[in-house]
View 1 (tube, helix red, strand yellow):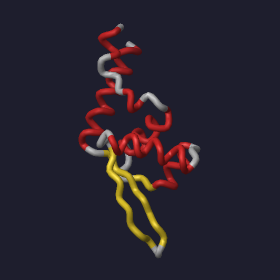
View 2: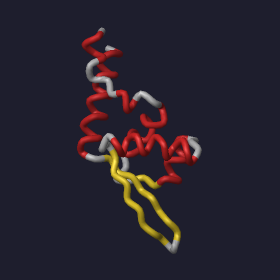
View 3: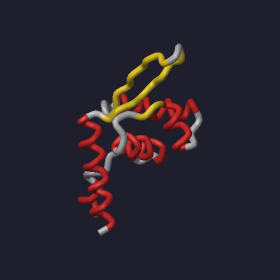
Length: 96
């Protein structure tokens, strides 16, 4: 059993971070409000989890203005993709 746990990533244990990474894995980028609605999270809660993933270099943040309104979008990094795929593989192996 412990062998399966070696590939689990603490960064993805939280359901909000798991949801963020899942959304980013299937989309080129996702904006803050879309993630907030998708995950039913508050601004502060979502921002905190995004910051955690950003510190791990699993996501990148882009800020721009669209029609004079700020737009913050997120994309998954190569490191983030690799880490998340490894985590998912560990979960699948555990279930087998």
